[in-house]
Each structure stands twice: as structure tokens, then as C-alpha cells.
Image (cartoon, rainbow, N blue to C red; front, side):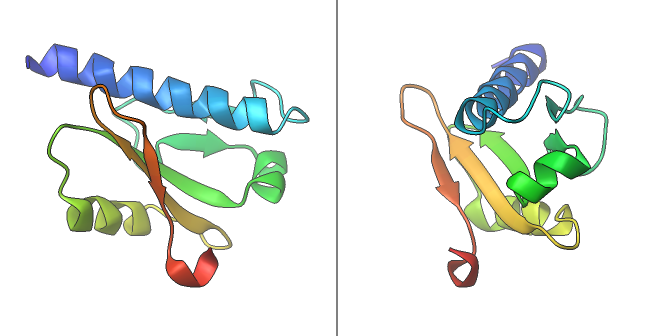
Length: 106
């Protein structure tokens, strides 16, 4: 896969995760939950302070065929803000996405 295609695939996945959060929490608006631009550091889904109260997670998204789960979890934990729980959303082509959270926080 070309790098440009891979980046587009990642953006689509982030947008799908954002849309799912907005659908599950109708009290939040489009400005409360946004997918970040790839060049920005931190979690892949940006939450407003209001959204963090309703959905207290730092979300990392991975959409790859061969996932290094431990590397992805380390990245997710490094991007987790204080007062939120690490949440890793991962998927691959033609498969249903999954979510990983620390067992203590589930």
C-alpha cells in the first residue's frame, strides 16, 4: 500500500470512530469530538472538556493488517491525558474493529 493510501485509510478509520462516539452520545456536538490531523501529537480523537466528562477516554486508532499490539498500547498510554483512560481502537480490512482498555478500568 502506498503511504498516501495508508494515511487516507487511517483518516477514514478515525472519522468512523468519531462518528460512532457522536452516535452513542447524542448530547455531544461535532465540535466536542474531532479526529486530529496526522501531524498533531497526542490522542487520535480530540475531545472537548465537556466530551471528556461524558466520555473520559484518550482514544488511539490503528487500522493496519499486522498490528504490533504492544507498540500500539504503549503509544496509546503515552498519549493518555491525566484523568482519562487509555482506549485503543484497532481494526483491519474486512474485519470488525475491536477496542482494548486496561482490565482495571473495564
